[in-house]
Length: 275
Ligand SMILES: NC(=O)C1=CN([C@@H]2O[C@H](COP(=O)(O)OP(=O)(O)OC[C@H]3O[C@@H](n4cnc5c(N)ncnc54)[C@H](O)[C@@H]3O)[C@@H](O)[C@H]2O)[C@@H](O)CC1
Ligand SMILES: Nc1ncnc2c1ncn2[C@@H]1O[C@H](COP(=O)(O)OP(=O)(O)O)[C@@H](O)[C@H]1O
Ligand SMILES: [Mg+2]
Figure 1 (cartoon, rainbow, N blue to C red):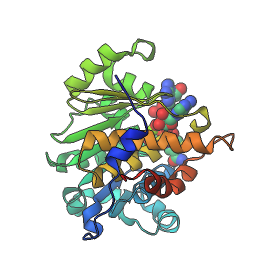
Figure 2 (cartoon, rainbow, N blue to C red):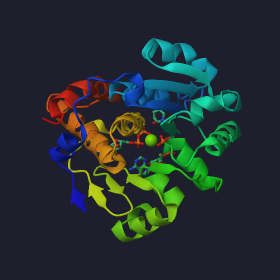
Figure 3 (cartoon, rainbow, N blue to C red):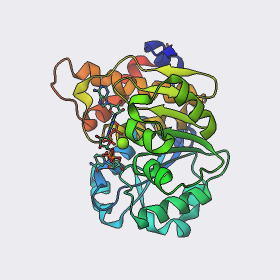
């Protein structure tokens, strides 16, 4: 197990090349946010934008369109029930995030299946929240892609069958290998399982135990892997920075909210970029 430190940020966050445009920094499509969970997909999308994603499209329930536009005018909108009419939004994305606030009813399942069918093997796919629960409960097959799963311990129990109090390095690693994906097992000290390495987060605080904190992390990871070449390194850097910001803010705050983390991402990226 490799302990993460500030080093991961300095190694990952490069100075932006002058010769660049929005396309240089990742085209990201996020799918989720049913009519009760607009916040989840808005937080995920905001985190991706604030982490530097070049172009962000949010596919969500049509009731969330105004809220999305008001909260995040940088994001484009599409109706998540019209995936098959908007195939290009999935197929042309560098990174796809599915799950924050998606819900687990039949309609959510249909959206998930439609998205998974369109994923190409070179695309990066982050599967979070409700999408993990659906895959576990409905035994949905994962597509061929560069997959990153971001379960909390209960979602990991559902997906892996390993009970929370029996989750440990050996069994988690075995299951990660079977899934052939990067597994971000979230807890107060998140662990990242990749094919050949395992990283442990060393920062974070109970001040960040608030709904939407994981949705925010999923968007941050998307922003980072859309920009920075080395996927495992970018995933680890996003996780470390998410908690690092929370820890810093918690010096003066009893609780730290997801949107406060989001607002701080650009400042921390500047502070820790490669010298
Ligand atoms: N504002 C919003 O729209 C929000 C939407 N959310 C969405 O709601 C959906 C359901 O996600 P939830 O995680 O709330 O519900 P889940 O039912 O999937 O998981 C929560 C259950 O897991 C248990 N649990 C055990 N260990 C845990 C751990 N380490 N971390 C978290 N839970 C643990 C909890 O006690 C609880 O019973 C997701 O799609 C999520 O994205 C949530 O993120 C909350 C905020
Ligand atoms: N006590 C804690 N200490 C450190 N980090 C925490 C703590 N509680 C929660 N977190 C972090 O907050 C996030 C919670 O994710 P998740 O449960 O998916 O939230 P949500 O689905 O509500 O957005 C994870 O990144 C987790 O590591
Ligand atoms: Mg979550």
